[in-house]
Image (cartoon, rainbow, N blue to C red; front, side, top):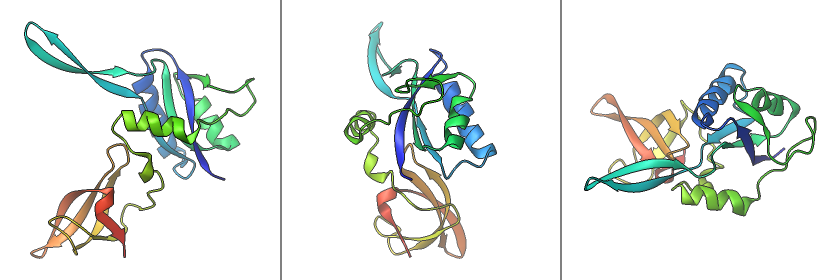
Length: 177
């Protein structure tokens, strides 16, 4: 089965809470192989008050969260029963499967947020050994310690001077060995 992006309706103002709750449920219920990324679409907004510039994050779609899922009965159930979720957008009834977003729709949304969908198929895992292919640590081998798909960053432990040193890299800077 393939993974797709779905829109989940939430109580307004609870988008970040739903994201946190869903990420915790995915981990506690062992659903990492079916539910991948949870995104609250936001954009930065500049405001000038009293001659001071203030940058705030504004929700692009208040009351909605995007979730990347391999849609099965189990993954549907986990998302649908997360506190704060009122349902999937695009499902006719309570038991029917929702309609996924089109690739061009999710590409546009992620691009507007400064995220890029081309790394959605990033298939590295924590503890995997990789080769750094560019930057100051080029040709160093390291072990993946942490993966942040939202920011498309990865923390790799590189052996320097006999010590493991954590290095933050972009997804594009590493390759499998």
